[in-house]
Length: 119
Image (cartoon, rainbow, N blue to C red; front, side):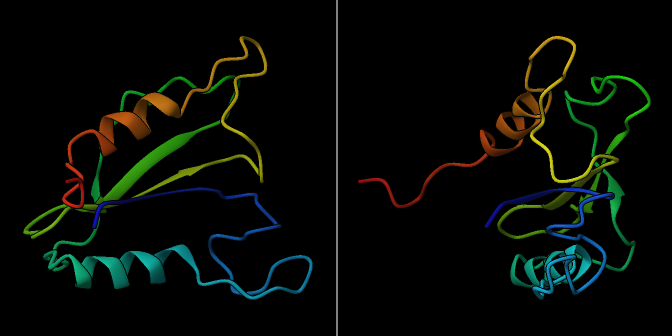
């Protein structure tokens, strides 16, 4: 199952690196999700996560950053990717242009796979 987990390093509503949110809810940290899905997809985790270049690299406005990494080697079904950006709990919209800077990377990733459940 392909997964591209996109999260903000400054997100306090759905924190990617901690378990408890600002409002007291519990969430599974991003790395836990990465490991669970990479096990399910049969990925080779011995080399750690690799840089995963996307079409959205260098599209963020200002000093904001975006980087995708993932378990990509030896995966039977699909790679397991996580993309972190330095925003909070925000939409991927460039405030200067109104463009969605992540949509191209998401489509580029998901369009590699076919829906096996279509008739």
